Length: 396
Length: 145
Image (cartoon, rainbow over all chains, first blue to last red):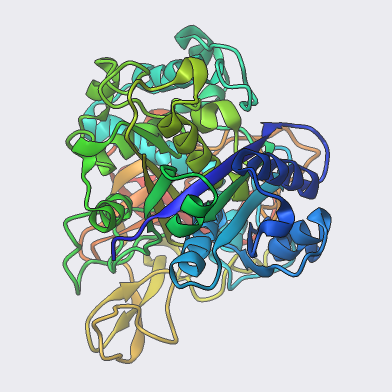
């Protein structure tokens, strides 16, 4: 299958700690995306919401919650939960409806009002839930996993905490140029080094914050886009939503142990690598075709891992690519020119959608001071709890 | 201190002293090992599905990676808010015979400064701070409590 869907509109509510409900952020983002598309909400045939996880129903029924707030108009509705990959799966749900002919034009919305501090599992005693167990038995927070990956990279590839800090320096420099980012000031390596250790070897400024925020997209069939007077829109060419392959041999959130490899030899490519390669295969493109990438820099060290897993460089060469300036704005393959999660923080159901918003603006040439010159092809990559992987490839 | 302690999770570990061990399960059809234990279905997609038998895991392995917890983890981890937070190390350990990595808290007194990737560690019984439930700890070999 090689069929594109059009991105007619993209919109966000700025990230921050605003102290309001997620519905308000989602509706603001939806209005911005509709205005960008030049469409009225009543023109939309279907709405897909990426779910937040909060007690009570509204967060779990995001599609209908946003539809009600925008004003009931009879649209088809879906809600999607896939942890950090929720937004990408919402995009994929919209795309499937468009390509199957169920809907011509779909609004995708994700928004969150994140709690302060560490993410934690929903309440109650749930000893069957691996996410509950890793907290209850080990006190293993998300940053402890990021710390494990970072220490492993130091031991295997020779990365240093100074390398990790340079990811923050790079991303904060572009985040300072992004009006939707939560953090709008440049950070120095000395400031990273002076911040408190959270999970050795990672410091506070190596780890992304939790934030409020919202993002939305208006997607349509290519035929609808032509009729609507957008003959050459940014197009989504691939959405990968893969799971790992047994045995998954890299310790990953929220697991306490990896699969055993005694019975089955592990595949040559890791889960994270397979997320990107599935998208490349679907798009008929490769890493050499990319103009930019938006990846989940939950930690600075994790961004370096994505360079390798996206095929931007060989395994173990991520820090070298960074040091050479290739992933900075103006380099060969700029990564996280939005400022990344380093500048935005996590608003879980919104962030994979926000990545596609950034690709859209970049591919249109509308990204202002953070524009990647001549951007033609972009990829997003992220990974959600419980074995959700996703990557989106967009082209102009 | 209470003399009766319950395990933080039932049937994940057993024994005392040098006999302490983690318990997993092994599929009789494909030999896959699972920890935490799988008792219902083998998760190897190519396996016709065998019986899952309880097996002890190797007591020794090598450090795959490690980190620590400088801030108090949220609930459901049990902590005493009256006491100052004491960070503990977490160690991910590669078990060669099982070809798997198992995470656990480091034994009391072991900090990240004592650890290195590749170092040999062994599993020992431990107590979850503030909860008094029993658990497993990883401790560099040659270190005695």
